[in-house]
Length: 394
Image (cartoon, rainbow, N blue to C red; front, side, top):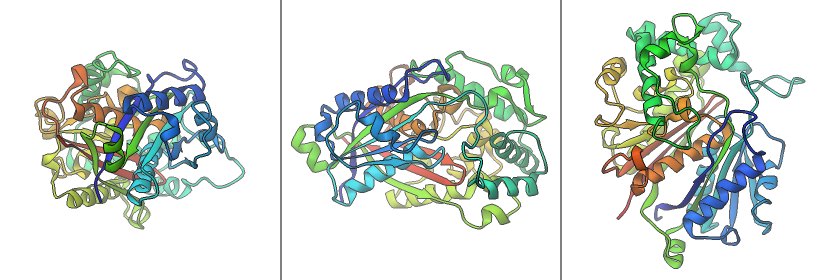
């Protein structure tokens, strides 16, 4: 089976809650931009997968009807923070199965200010087991659960490997330097590691406010096509999805006693291993990566899980600048979730947008010179992790 081609991508600027158009308009704009980028019209799309977390059923139809009403299958996708890349995963599988030649994936989110929470209070949360495990492994806390997960995982990493708080601060400062070059990012102001350390404390000794991503609103989209379709329609075939894996939790998440497992360390490692083996490459072959830095702590943990450095070697990896321009792998050139923003349903497709531009050589001041292999990591507690490998084909 030929690799699936990323024919077109689109993305809206990410904005704070309340400073944005309705989700239907944001999604429609991202889709129109992706179609224009591909040189196609909506009537040529045969299936669509629409990702969103905070929205009613059939929000995908409401958004896509703004673009056209062609009777195609529209599937709504919700997989927590990995929703956007899950939509991408399903779109790719539709093409690889032979069911369609031109498939749209769109993700969007219209979020409210403040911590994430459930809108269904008459039933147990799907994250109840994760909450219980966090209490058992890390103790009681009044912090919102998302912060508890990643602050506790960060604390465990610090205790296990001696990782200093400054390492997380340096990761956040790096994100700000990258985002300063990205006109679509929410936060474009550069901050220093000291600025990060001096920001208000969220979890004592472990996390400050600037180490956490903000609630964000926005949309992103990608049009995927088969190679035969691309040839028939004269579509740019340079960017291809070479491999992809979606993993979910195993019993160790709740039995290991480790917060690193609760936030998906082994899921990420397994998804990355599958992708590397399938493509016949290793982590050191990757030129650029967009990974799921919902908190600076998760970026640090993910370096190890993706194989960019050995477990316990993160401090040196960061101190040596191996995660930025001139280093081993330029990580989150977009600014990542920490600076670009994190509209849950859109994040995975915004990562796709960035990596497609990088492989085309169209990333402007963010361009990673000579980029030919790009890795995407999108994680959702609850859980699902999607790792996607893109390659440039000339």
